Length: 131
Image (cartoon, one colour):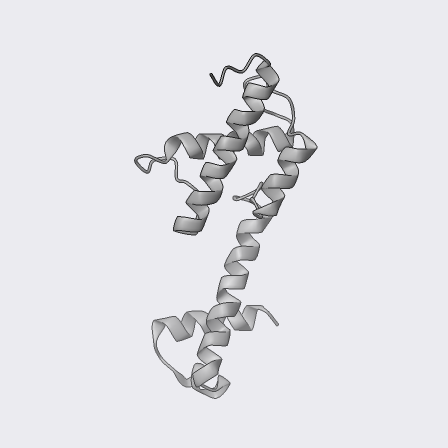
C-alpha cells in the first residue's frame, strides 16, 4: 500500500525525492532554480533550506542540521552552499579566464591590447587587474 509508519523514513524519502528533482533540474537547465521563476520556487526554497541547515541556522527551528549522508549527496552534485559569497566571485573569475582563453585561441595578446571593441576592452582591463 506504500504506507510509511516511521516519520523519519518519510522525511528521508521526501528529502531524497527533492534531491533527485534538483539533480534532474540542474542536468536539464545547467543552473539552480530561481526564486521568482514560475514552477521553480518550491525547489528554490528547498535549496535555500539546505543552505540554512548546513550553516546551522534553519529558520524553522524544528529541523536539524544536514546529516552526513545528505551533505555527501549534495556534495556529489557540487551543490553551492554559498552562492552569494566567495564561490560567486570564483565563478566570475573562472568565467573571465575562460573568455580570455577563448580569445587567445584565435588572437594574440597584442590584438587584445590593440582592439577597440567593448568586450576586448573589458577583458583587457580584467587581465591587467590580475597582475
